[in-house]
Length: 253
Image: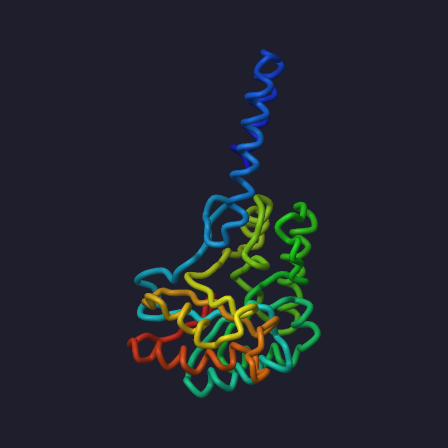
């Protein structure tokens, strides 16, 4: 943001000093804004600030993968997901939407009581999140923090942007709140893909220690039989993780 501001000032000075250079100044501004936009639309990118896409090597997550589950909690899916995780002795991280936590407080507390962590996925999960101004974006992030803390008694330490999209205003907000942006190593696209085998194969491709895998309990696509895709994906995914000699771990614990 500082570099962008400095560039704007420099280009303005350049045009004032030599008005004939305005086409070059305009081209510089357009290029700058295109670069910022591209950085915000690249969920795993680091152009706009630090972004965790893998577990840190040599830390407590050594030999582990992180299962992250977005957009819940939802009463018709999350309990089944929790039962599957229990069956395999697996731990997961739920990136929850603040207003859904407030709507389902008992379910949110159950997630935590079963040994998982809840992290911040904004207050409302606006799809226009990446074009919000600093005040509205801060309200979304802070609102998610407050909602989760009020229900489960712990303030999140990780944040995931809705759909992974963001803008330059986000990083200063996260730094102020002590939050770390987390994206993923691979995603299954299970909000649109109805075939559990396809989703599972995407997540297991080149599986390695340190991977952060993304699934959804909220907004989950449904199989041909009407089941949430995540419910069909998880058992085979967790079995494959175990066979690879890996364990699961939660983020932000």
